[in-house]
Length: 333
Ligand SMILES: [Zn+2]
Image (cartoon, rainbow, N blue to C red; front, side, top):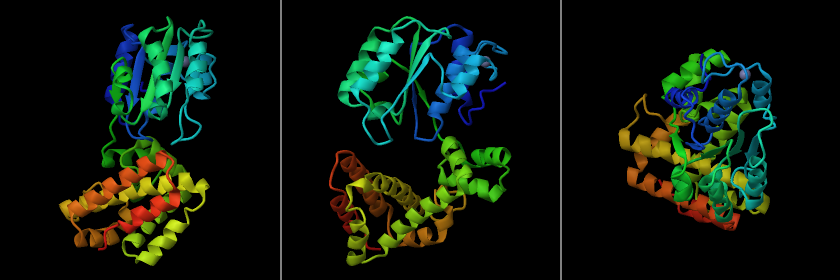
């Protein structure tokens, strides 16, 4: 029996061992890129903890009341806390409310569990508030956190958690799984494995939303177009971000361009090899051509520029100025 989490078999084995041996820790931190399966793994762990009829210690049945309610995220002993949307701030009120709930006796399970998602979005006050729960754990409670990276949290938080570091899957392995699970053709599955950079959860959501794939590739193509564009065209593209409501769109564009420049960096450093784990296989020809005109140094510089812009974006900078700044600093290839 398996929890059916893709690519993290070692983590599953470790957590099962904790449950079977009665050695579960009070707090776990699941780290890795968004879409890699942090939340899925954490929820499978809660199922294994709460299952009323486990086939074996550390397993879950999937059909008892606790398993079914957890599947729907509607269990009286599970509390999920997160920022209103990705990229926003998780505030102290959310932490306090969940702490209050954790202090009560479990109702239908052996423990009450708090699951805080994307905890790097918690501001300093919220992180400090949670520290209290970590320092003086409530009996019969479990604390699960997900984050992109343990270094994005206060060291006093990550050091009190068992850190489960999740890595992307090897692309051919993910492609094989997608083929089987979604009845995909090998080439289509491999394309999504590349586009998701080995993140299983993200790849599955793309498999279910073909329009989304087209949209992402089209934003990546905009990046290529901007590299070939003149100043006026770059200003015109930036002007589309005049409206403050476009913040999530710009954030997404920057994330996609991060992957695009990573591809360019990879191609310029290694030459065009079929095995290279580039994200945008659809755009391979244009990318290879552009990569040949630049150098790893140039693309590395652009990449760090994009990373810096994402930070500014999170700090509420003016969107249009930010986009102009980035585009005018794009290399002229
Ligand atoms: Zn069950």
